[in-house]
Length: 131
Image 1 (cartoon, rainbow, N blue to C red):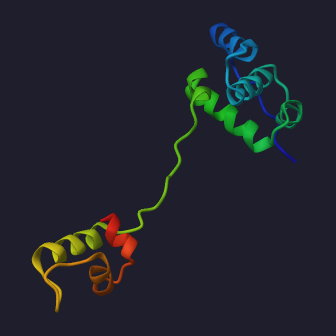
Image 2 (image 1 turned 30 degrees about the vertical axis):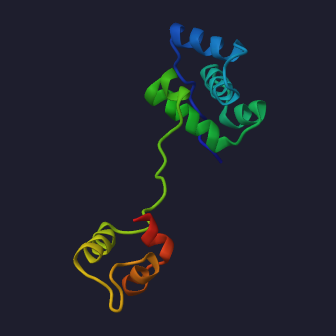
């Protein structure tokens, strides 16, 4: 079903550091879990057996093995980058609101209010307020 995993190569210094992380009472548990995964993978334990022993999923084991192989112990210490939230308003829309505020005036008024600006720009009043 799955291709057997080869043992992760861990040098003496890395193994010493990983064991320190596991045994320290000050290490966050997510780091301990990652270190235990790599130590077991270094002993040649199959991925399914590693996932059962540490109580996590096989994809998590594969992810941690890959991060260790790519970045070493430092790769286990930090989380990967995530894409983050998409921008709600485009730069063009923000620029249009700012330009309209500076260059125009509303009909029957001397200055723009948030609600007056929101309607012609097609935005909510909160979006205009954020701008």
